[in-house]
Length: 97
Image 1 (cartoon, rainbow, N blue to C red):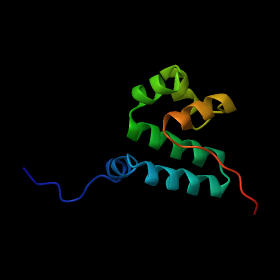
Image 2: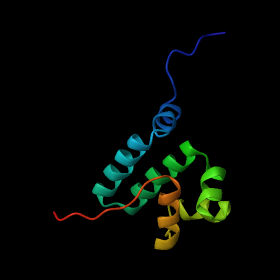
Image 3: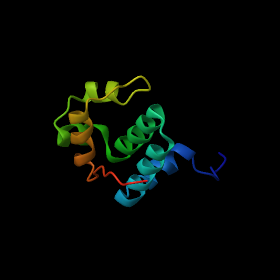
């Protein structure tokens, strides 16, 4: 059997996003792009890295609803987004441009 030389990109990304600082920088970069779908993909990756069930429980959100909320067509309510970010140890901030 051949030894795998490289790691799968998604596997590496999820491992990296276990770090709160990396997760915050990743989500911040997605927000700067101004693309809702990109932001939701980034948030979904961070949640997946932390564990969907664990995050849903901590955020007091239904896991299935959280999956829908983070889908490409998701449109999360602010209260759900706030609960999700808080459960990840993250927070939103606003700065002047």
